[in-house]
Image (cartoon, rainbow, N blue to C red; front, side):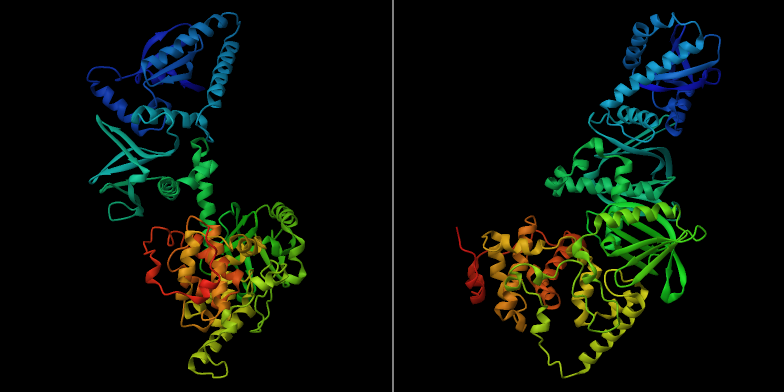
Amino acid sequence: MWLKPEEILLKSALKLWVQERSNRYFVLQRRRGYGEEGGGLAGLLVGTLDSVLDSTSKVAPFRILHQTPDSQVYWSIACGATREEITEHWEWLEQNVMKTLSVFDSNEDITSFVHGKIRGLIAEEAKGSLIREEDPEKFREAHLKFEKCFGLPEQEKLVTYYSCSYWRGRVPCQGWLYLSTNFLSFYSFLLGSEIKLVISWDEISKLEKTSNVILTESIHVCSRGEDHYFSMFLHINETFLLMEQLALYAIWRLFDKETFENDPVLHDPLQITKRGLESRAHSQQFNAFFRLPKEETLREVHECFLWVLFIHYNTLGKMCISDNYICFASQDGALCSLIIPLREVVAVETADATSKAVSVAVKGKRAFRFSEVRDFENLAAKLRGKCNVTSSPQHGAGTEVAVGPGPDAALDCYEGQPLSSHKDDSKMVSTEALMTVFHPQDMENLDAKMLKEKMKEQSWNILFTECGRGVTMLRTRKTRDLIVRGIPEVLRGELWLLFSGAVNDMATNPGYYTELVEKSMGTCTIATDEIERDLCRSLPEHPAFQSDTGISALRRVLTAYAYRNPKIGYCQAMNILTSVLLLYAKEEEAFWLLVAVCERMLPDYFNRRIIEDLNPRYYPPCPLAGQHRAPGP
């Protein structure tokens, strides 16, 4: 393997290398102890040194140096894992370079020519190489050691590697951990004792960070009933994050092969890099924490202070920016958090250079001030550009979020067009929560339960006064405490939509649900048959589902979701969940809440592996369902 020319003081390296060939301009050397019978003490010491140290010498037992006559300074230009490989490089130099060097007058010209030739060879090799890292030279050395030690298939892509200790019982063995697309590998050579470990990612049953009396922090890997512990990482969190990502991708290959193959990054080993994995992992954590659509990609993170009006001091935290959102989370993650969709932003301003502040004004006459932001002027310019791109006529002043404390200031329009604005939708899609039409209790009879609901509602109204209302509401510890105490019925639809993130899905996909309803109604599939059979078993005691209004709304939502996500289609208990959602949310809102639960909050809960009896004779006929049953083929 050709190497980027690196200066070496030959005098200090003579004890570790043995010269095998030489001429006026090049020297071929063999690592001391390699290829010698027994190896002796020198071989053991050199082998241990190669395993522990991160240097060129540890990579390969052979190397070629370019020498400058009458000088102790040499340049490493090639290395090889086998004698055949290094001999091939040597012969190429003799045939293609040696004859040319005699025409140069000075040693500087000779060295410059050799360096240029070697760099050109490396550039040619890199065109078809799997290696795409920030430090390609160092990574190529590690890749060569990886291939030499483990003998895995040539197409196996090394993602990254780390120096660490592997514990055999209570004895740590220092070596190198290699993370590739399909395997976790470890190699160590200490005083003649070689440890070689290869674990396939899909064989790992447990992957976790642990600590005990002996190991302050370590990574525990369980595979085929055996426990393996790795410790003494320089950046253990980064290492664990990448291991977690690679193990997750192995599971995707097994259980969701179609999605994996359609992903251009994961399907192509050339695209799987350390930086790419870290970026995807951070974006996934960002989307999960703030309940954002899975398509969002985290672009920037800035440490700053958020001025919080109702507690009258600056809160330190991180501002995270994606393509469509500005988010903030306090340093402890629990004090407060904030989500600002760029569609809600009406102005971005900067303050004086002393405070380094960026002020973001949103609909509803509210503003947020982020101070001590590094490069705040550049950030403000970027945000202005993003807001201009994402703004659209449908997000005008008429869709401002209500902020007032009144109990009737519910969120009637979630940044998208109201359902009733679509042509002929009012006849097909319900625009009211079923609980407002079919309430099982007498509203005038304020019993103990109703009084408790009114008290909860009043507590939320006080919170809305302090923290705002709608998608840009500031979420605090008090918010979480009120959720734990229970959300009042009158606010459930609004707050479920807000805290699940479904409000953002619906706002970015106006008209999507109506289109799905139009396409899915009238189709006849296994999913629609199962839906029809379960319609009258969905909260049958509730008045809303004893009428055609509730049954029809339930049918539309379930059929539309089965059409949207055929991998899940329809599973048992989805009808019960959707029935509850329809009681407190409008029909389109209930659909997006179902999407949030099935695809983001509980992504593996509903699946086709639930076994059920498909024989219709076990289920009583439903007259309402039969009237709307899709015609057979």
